[in-house]
Image 1 (cartoon, each protein chain N blue to C red):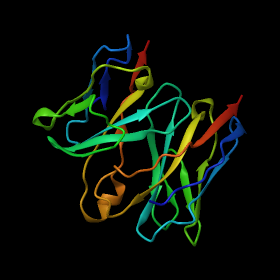
Image 2: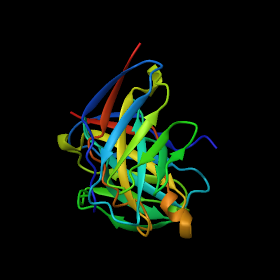
Image 3: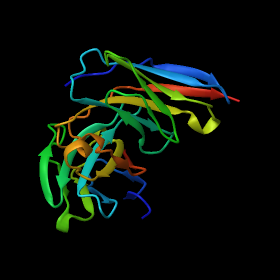
Image 4: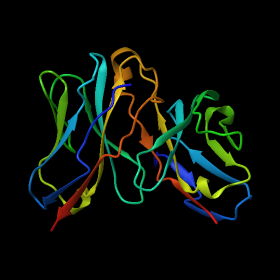
Length: 113
Length: 119
């Protein structure tokens, strides 16, 4: 199963944009890129996912490199509530289920007021 | 729908005791997953159900662990003869098995977790 590499931690200031990188150099053509985040003392929360094209939703944007070997989660204006661990995960299109999702250590994002 | 509900949120027990956790998934979700998460680590897959059928168990799930999902609704995870190494957050998640192009968007909705401390 393809794995992802993320920085252990990042820091941002409130109301500034945050770019969270993820490397997935062994991604296959049918792998979706999923992002989840986990706030302290809570379960993970889905953020966004994509396959090839950049994606936007109310929470964030996902920029996917042309070769798909990396992606960037973009929080346009960080708030204190965005302080969390962000996980970048690959999910095979034909996996049929999520049992093989490999959760790494994620990136711990700190947001300064 | 209020999302995925897990009970109890916290459980402190003595080594050797049995504990049971309950998960109530989102009602229209046909898949249910159990994960375990220790401090500073990402979630680790334990087992999953499609409707009432338990389709896969991780090697992490020793004989002391058993999970059920009667009638394909709520699920329970029981740990017998608990050990200190079982101390962790037990997370439940549910999803809907999509078809075709939707299968890649099979996102998980997690509960808040049940934190187990074994003394």
